[in-house]
Picture 1 (cartoon, rainbow, N blue to C red):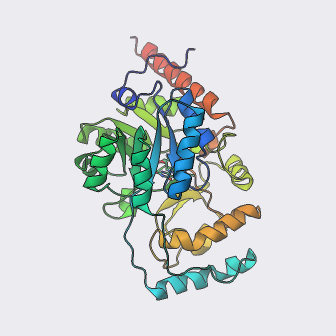
Picture 2: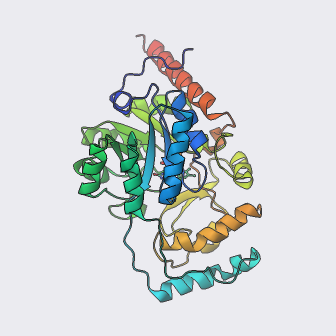
Picture 3: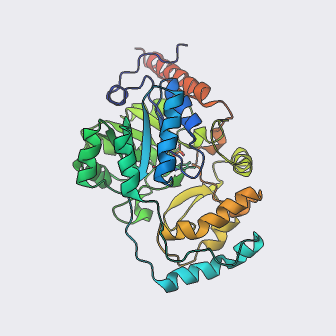
Amino acid sequence: MAYEGQWQTEAVGRLGIRVPIVGAPMGGGPSTPALVAAVSEVGGLGSLAGGYLSPDRLRADIAAVRELTAEPFAVNLFVPTPVEPTGEAIEAAQRALEPYRRELELPSRPASTAGPWAEDFEAQLAVVIEERVPVTSFTFGLLPEAAVAALHDAGSLLVGTATTVDEARAVVASGADLVCAQGSEAGAHRGTFLGAAEQALVGTLALVPQVCDAVDVPVLAAGGIMDGRGVAAVLGLGAGAAVLGTAFLRCPEAGTSAPYRRALTAATETSTAVTTTVTGRMARGIENRLMRDLRDLDVPPYPVMHTLTSELRRRAAERDEPDLMSLWCGQGIRLGTDLPAGELVRRLADDAAATIARLTKAAGR
Ligand SMILES: Cc1cc2nc3c(=O)[nH]c(=O)nc-3n(C[C@H](O)[C@H](O)[C@H](O)COP(=O)(O)O)c2cc1C
């Protein structure tokens, strides 16, 4: 089957892509420039995960994507969360992490207890504006008005993440051009920024049509989509394209570490859980010892706790100890494959088209 087919959703048109497939931004390593370019090159939209990158590294990664493809791609940014943790909260968290640091033969305390807790958002934003990135996506909140105007002036299309209808409305009111509705099946951090994260665990099947009814911009659907059936399903719900993260984690182009890949290959639909204590923000991943042990801990908010645990999670990956890593992934994990990203995008588009054709035939159309 000709994988590009005739995909004429408004989202496909606005994003300038050829198939309704978006490779989700995956921070912490998986979203390499090679993965982003491979998705874009075959007509999908690859996404660089800019949130954890220094401004210099972000600029270099954008250049690396452009070396590999002339097609549109997205850069994802984290809207900063203002936090003022107390010294006591930081020290309590550090005390709780000491046994794991000892186990991993790390020095007993991380070098800094005073931050900075995140990369310089304004500097990251300046890079995205200067580089005139075709699509900018954001999560964890809303972009400031001036940033929306500057990105639009630079020709960037804006995609904001929402986990509820209220958030979707707020994303649109802030000036975003598209909404990404992130269902609770999704891997890694939840984008929730209004109300309690526990109340915002709405599944993709329920969330997408309610968001589509509430907003007048194209909606992208994320969470648990792993194959052509999932892509067809969310198009049926009213989404203009499907956003897949977990499905790309095992691609050879992804920067996923060896122990992470092994854990993904062995995981099933019951292997994941959501945690709020590993990083201070709700996230879904394979449940392991780190997640279980920290479950009831009172921790400083994201991104403070994220920073406090990041060194030990990185070290655990280097030492091939998946039980102390973060193994972020979504509930669709059993459907994962090791296909190269370009082939996966083609297969997703072909299978979605075949599913839609089968349904059309079954309906006697
Ligand atoms: C390993 C991993 C890292 C992620 N990092 C980011 C990120 O940096 N920014 C972001 O907006 N979303 C991030 N996400 C969430 C994705 O954007 C998307 O919502 C999710 O992957 C969709 O669900 P799925 O994993 O079931 O396909 C990440 C997801 C995964 C699996």
